[in-house]
Length: 128
Image (cartoon, rainbow, N blue to C red; front, side, top):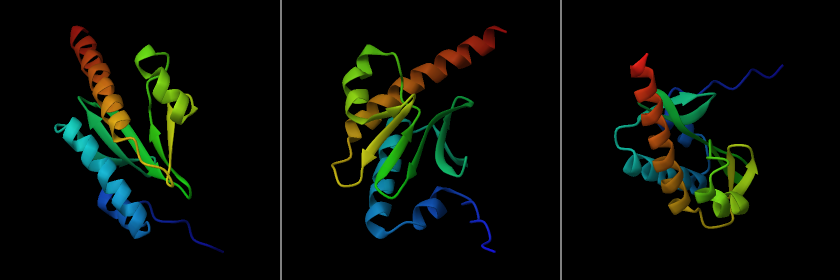
């Protein structure tokens, strides 16, 4: 009987579990998020690298055999219509194929948008 894979304790351990070429991409994604949201906290949630901001999750990302999954992407927003058409894989999910250039500009845009959403949520919570 195969034992279940131990969940990573942090993002460094998560990234270390992939081939070197994928590690480099994951580190670039991590750096892009960190540059866009320097106050966000890193953690692991659902066994994926996760960034939290103002008490709420900001974005998750995960590596797969042929792509990087990036969650959650804004849906129903005209500002993201083009990006979602290119990389959309389902509600709130973007797929970046590993054999193509990773769209770091899209990642920055999504993270900035999600930060605004989190700030609005935090402000709403203070009202109550």
